[in-house]
Amino acid sequence: MTMNRYTLPRTTTLTTVASLVATIFALSGCMVGPDYHRPDVSVPATWKELPGWTRAEPAAEGPKGDWWTGFNDPLLNELEPLVSVSNQTVRQDYANYQEAVAEVRVARSALFPTVGVTGSLTRERSGSSSSSAAASRLGLGSEQAVNNSGSLEANVSWAPDLWGEVRRTIEENAATAQASEATLANATLSEQIALANAVIGLRATDANIDLLKATVDEYRRSLSVVQNQDQAGTVAPSDLVSARTQLENAQASLIALGVARAQDEHAIAVLTGRNPEELDVPHSTALPTLPEIPAGVPSTLLQRRPDVATAERQMASANAAIGVAIAAYYPDISLSGLAGFTQSPLAGLLRASNYVWSLGGSATETLFDGGLRNAQVAAARAAYDSAVAGYRGTVLSAFENVENDLAGLRILANQADALDAAMRDATRGAQIALDEYQAGTVDYTTVATAQATLLTTRQSALSVQQQRLLDAASLIGDLGGGWTGKLHDPLHDPLRASPAAQASGASPAQQAPQASQAPQATTTATTPSR
Figure 1 (cartoon, rainbow, N blue to C red):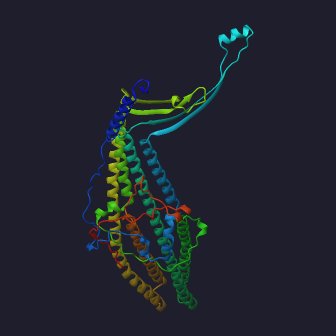
Figure 2 (cartoon, rainbow, N blue to C red):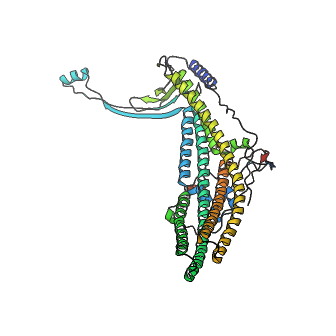
């Protein structure tokens, strides 16, 4: 229906328009669909695998900030900050987050009217009329007119969000953007833990190289003893062969460690955004130290883990999608208006007498769709149920991961103590066997066995030490690392990079302001030291 000043008095028109606008704004407060409430999950009071748990300081709710400094490794301290800047996986997730924030703005734009302007200019020559043709037969001549015409009009159209479809879409996209932000934080943390694991692996390989070098030296000394005995003719030739074979096998194992070291070095380079040939890590004789890690109480894990936050925001997004689907049951209403000037001929276009306007509205309702809308709502509800199950599963997996890490640290500490005693006995046994061989009371098989046992025990102790460091890094990651748990409003306070980070294409994952959190009583997991 179109209303203009020629069909209704001006005062009546303005009153009608004002009433219509007031009604629309009153209805715009409605939003169909369920409001979001985070479902409850079962949370244990304490960690099962945390022995003798005690109350800790309120501020010790979990790892914070530069958590890698607890390992006291210079290489780790140097390279970890580069992950949030140069790692390609992190930069990809940051780009995905920026895309999600843009989609929120796209959805929000539907709340506002669309305004445009149209101008036209036409110059035309009219055809001959019957009167001019008759004048031509009489020899009076004729002249065909050339006319200029034009128009200048502004138009506006608006689809008021009476049922909340647009607002639910904004809600859905905003939750998706926050899920993308949490995914970015999770990717950053995962890559940082991967770098810590690679550095730990590299340091353990260097320690193993040192161990095998020392073993090769010991085997050379043993071979020298056997050679002296062989020259004296007091031992069988097989003893010399056995000693030489033992040395050669140790040398081969030492060479093979170069493969693992090269792979760890290449992994470190890629994790920091470099080509493998650009990084050369010198050999180090020191392993990282085992940090003390505050485990906190299980309830705080839901706020500290970015993967849990991702699952929760995906659940909120799926809930909003139900409202979008339900809004399809209601009619689509749109309003349009036009005002401007039109004139033919063109002269005097902007005179008041050439002013024109129109207002109009339309409503569309689907009467039959073969069950399409019912199916769409059912699909949206099923997607929400799936997101709820995914969220609860993520929470359970988070608890499982932390319990596994705590159990590993506790059990490996006991194993390390047992291996310490075994190394002392194996060292003494190898020396006794060599002394007895020199005295002629045992054959070389006894010496070789004792030395092989010593090497195996040392390697086992080194492997346990490495695994304890890996479990410590895993525990830090499973507790959320240094993430504060804060998610930004994608419309009013999106996550942004600093100017320096933007210049280098950096991700701002580590630049989020610290979230204020209420003090909470926590428990502390202290990794036993050897």
